[in-house]
Length: 291
Ligand code: SAM
Image (cartoon, rainbow, N blue to C red; front, side, top):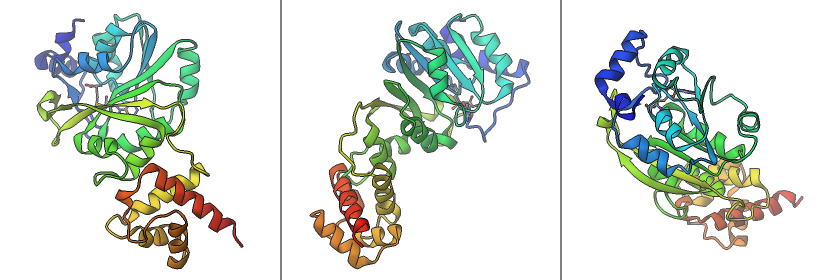
């Protein structure tokens, strides 16, 4: 299969209709047909002759094909069984590609990496189904998979939020969580016309460069994430108010905690740096330990 065939709308439509395939909105099926996007993603995701790739949702195989050209091994996980015969036809000739029929939200990815990539580095690269962007990314990060980077196409708006530095206006729970595990990079924007069928909104490709160590030391990791979630729960309100509601603690206690962390009670969640969230966590831990 040559690359441009899978970005040729007439060819893709013909293959899909031969297999009786119709697009499922519920599964986030928007296939890439812009010829420049997949080679770009493949070259930027870090895959090479020593670095394997896991792809989530190969669809008709357009990105899989580009990844197979740069990596020694590609393992692609597709939930929709109707696409298996399609993939056999479009990318079945690649001896370095393995398609697994499973749900990427449920599959044991640690095991998959152990079995499929016993040695060498691994990266993840995907045009993610948009309905599971946040839970999928959080799953990939929280499981601390032994991967070097995660390169994904997601909605542009989500990309902006994820890449926003904590302490800036666009930041939120997801940016703080993501910055705990990795250094996110906004790579490039992609227009709706690059997909079949076109989605309603712009998309973007981001790369999450996995950190060996978190950028801050949280006294208690679970509590740190609880604090971040609570802080952004009512982002228009002051930190004191949203933490009091989100952590179910009296405002007086929260006020004391913030003073201890050197943070003004009138501050807002979006102004907090990762270090300040860690300071609040430490102060909360102390408060909870005091009888
Ligand atoms: N990679 C192809 C492309 O770029 O043209 C298809 C991308 S499409 C946005 C998302 C793909 O993910 C679809 O093929 C869909 O069936 C698949 N998918 C949806 N949910 C999934 C899940 N939970 N696990 C694995 N694949 C999933």
